[in-house]
Image 1 (tube, rainbow, N blue to C red):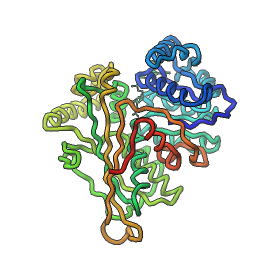
Image 2 (image 1 turned 45 degrees about the vertical axis):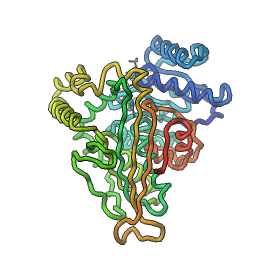
Image 3 (image 1 turned 135 degrees about the vertical axis):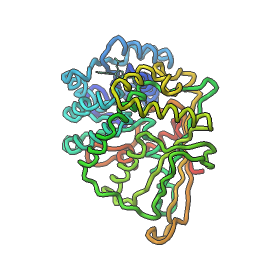
Image 4 (image 1 turned 30 degrees about the vertical axis):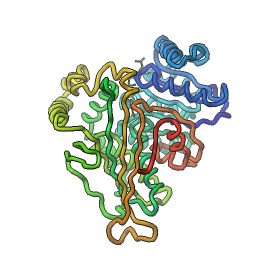
Amino acid sequence: MVFVQTSSSRPYHLLVFGASGFTGQFVVEEVARVAAEGPAGNLRWAVAGRSKQKLEKVLEQAAGVLGKPELRSEVDIIVADVGEPDSLEAMCKQAVIVLNCVGPYRFYGEPVVKACVENGAHHIDISGEPQFLEGMQLNYNSQAADKGVYIIGSCGFDSIPADMGVIYTRDQFKGTLTAVESFLTVSAGSEGGCIHDGTWQSAIYGFADSQKLQSLRRKFNHKPLPVVGSKLRRRGTLFYSNDIQQYTVPFMGSDPSVVKRSQRFLVEEHQATPVQYGAYAGIGGIGSIIKLMFAGMMFWFLVKFSFGRNLLIKYPEFFSFGLFSKAGPTRKQMEASSFQFAFYGEGYTEGQDPSQGKPNSKIRTLVQGPGRSNSPQRVRIAMPKKGGVYTPAAAFAKTTLIDRLNKHGIQFSVI
Ligand SMILES: NC(=O)c1ccc[n+]([C@@H]2O[C@H](COP(=O)([O-])OP(=O)(O)OC[C@H]3O[C@@H](n4cnc5c(N)ncnc54)[C@H](OP(=O)(O)O)[C@@H]3O)[C@@H](O)[C@H]2O)c1
C-alpha cells in the first residue's frame, strides 16, 4: 500500500526491495500495472535486492507476463544487501518509499527500518510477525516521528483485510460498533494450492520465540483498552460455525494483534470507541481437523528445538500436509484461489447508551478478493500528521484506500 509524493526530488518515488523473492516478483508486476494507470513517468520506481542478476530476471519475467518489454530497460536496478549498512543507506537516500519484501523480518527487517528512518524514506512492509512489528514500534516510533517518516507494517494479506475490514464495518454501522468477529475462508481452485515457504519460516521462528513477544509487550506499559458494551466472548479452540458452514479455529496469525494496536491508536489519538475483535479461520470438514491435529502436534513439538526447526524448514510440505511448499503456488493456482473475510459486528444504535444493556444492532460485512492480493495502491493523503510506526488502519483509516482496493479486485461490502 503506497502513497506517493510525486513532487519529491528523490530519484524514485518507490523502491521494491526484495523484488527477487516469491512475493517481491508479484509486487513488481502490480507496481508496473499501477504505474501504467497514471500519466507516463508519473510514478518513478525501481527494483532493489542483493542480486543484480536475479533482479534482471524478475524484470524480464514481468515484462513477459505484462507484455511490456520496456520494463527491462526503463526500470532501474539497485543492489543493496541487508548485511551491508552502506548499501541500505545509499538505497534509502534515493527513495520516497521503500516497499520492503525481504523476510523473515525478524532477521532482516530492522536494518532496513533503521536505514529508512535515518535517511528519510518511508517504509512499508508485508510482515505478519508481531514481534518484529511491535519491536519496531517500541524502538523507532519516536525517531520516525522526529524525522517525519512513516513506518507502516502489515500491508499485505496480513493484515489489510482484517484491519481495514474492522474500520469499514465500524464506518458502515449506524451507531456505535463495539465488537467484531471475523471468519476467514480460503478457496482453492480445481488445481489446489499452497502457501510459499517464506511465510512458513516466519511462522516457525515466530512460534519458537513467543515468550519474547510477551516480555516485549510489557515494555510498552499499556493500560488495558476499555471494554465498551458487552464483553466479546472468546470461542473455543475448535467449533462448527453455522455462518461459514465449516469447522473453525482461532486465527493464529498477526491480525488480532494488529487490529488491537490500531484500536489503541484510534482510541488514544482520536478518542474513538474501541472495537473488540476476535479472529477465526475456517478449516473445512472432519478430514481437515485430523490433518490439522497431527500437523499441529508435530509443529508444537518440533518448533521448540533447533533440530526440530531445521526439520520443519527443510520439509515444509511434509510437516504441513502440503499447505506450505518451497516452490509456492503456481500462477494458475493463485489465479484460481480466493479469500473471504466475513465480519460479524454488533453495537448500539444511535441514541442508545453502550454502557446500558446488551447490543441492540448487528451488521455483517465482507472483504473478499483473489489469492494474489499484495497490490500497491495510490491513496489520497489524510494520513496521521506526525511520522511514526503505524498499523494499516492507524495510517489509512481516513484515506481513500478502501475505495482504491474496491476498484482493484478486493471488495469491501455490507451484506
Ligand atoms: N503479509 C502477507 O500477507 C505476506 C504474504 C507473503 C509473504 N509475506 C512475508 O514476506 C516475506 C517474504 O516472503 P517470500 O515468500 O517472498 O520469501 P522469499 O521468496 O524467501 O524472498 C525473500 C527475499 O528476501 C531477499 N533477501 C534475503 N536476504 C537478503 C539480504 N541479506 N539482503 C537483501 N535481500 C535479502 C531475497 O533475496 P534473494 O532472491 O537474493 O535470495 C528475496 O528477495 C516473509 O517474511 C513472509 O512472511 C507476507
